[in-house]
Length: 410
Image 1: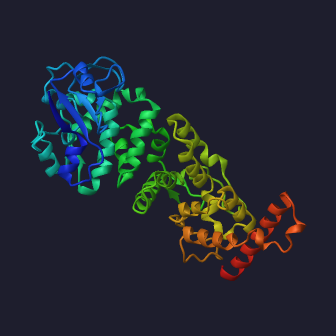
Image 2: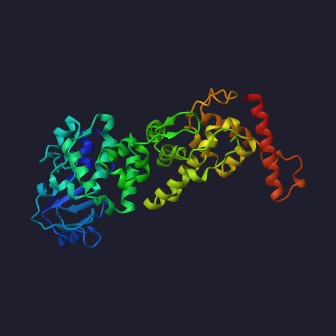
Image 3: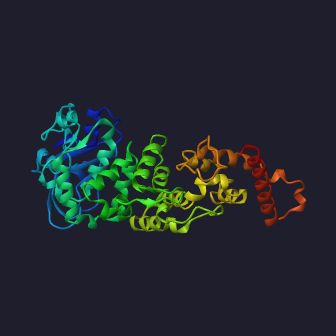
């Protein structure tokens, strides 16, 4: 029995990245042998075991043969006769198909080290196109490594297009799509993840809502011109990703412009608050991919309130305080930090009273800090108010305080 370190740990070592997880492959062993050594098997039909001390994953060397649709449609052979080379050959990219023996020597049958030097993402073998999940994985690695100059080889991209044209992406489970997308959103350049999916025609199957925006421009509610929502969204996703690693924030800033497809006149619309139509597409996407509720919330809020926030200077103080109420900032004041990255994204020259010299996030923070000073202790006589009356009086005082501040500062 021989044990090798494989996959991401070897790749990250060569790239100089931190190694967070280590995966191992075991050659020349069987499930019975592993169980005798006190390893704990994961599942009944898959040869992966947990080390009794380190709790790291050890997988028996195996080969895979396509026998169905989707990424689960494979027959696995994990006999003790499977070689290390055969196991590594089934992997997706050459940079992920290297191994390291117990002495630290790199074993590289498929040119992974050369591809790292050449900054290329290249498939290991033609069996690459048998697994639709690899389309998402390559897109994720492109997003993870694009800042180092990595690119996808032409042949690999051709295989990715072939997978998409076969429509096997439709057999991926929502949970798996979201898992890879989440990882893509964690990368230094998450916009590249979606751009690669577009290049290989995967968006139309995985994210038809985003694909719909790609080749279209929409009349802006803020100016007499047309905008490309996807380009604007990518710019924002790239910008905010340089400021925070929080996936919920990144996703929300990416989707905030979706409401632009619902055209309505901006004139005489000072009291538009939450636009329900704007979040219709988002709700469909989140429901289909089973996105966690907590992740959904901020995206829906930022999209629905997009028009309101972009025209915050002309909105009433009552609505602004209502917005703070909906965000539940009184109990969770740290939530205002999620808004700090917001910019004013349009030049509202038709509103002559607007003079913008600060970011939208800064302005929202300043207004919240002003109304936050109003509390129970601000009531002139607490005995005069009971129950809902306390809430109503706090609301009145907060609106009053905000109006006075705006009068002096706008």
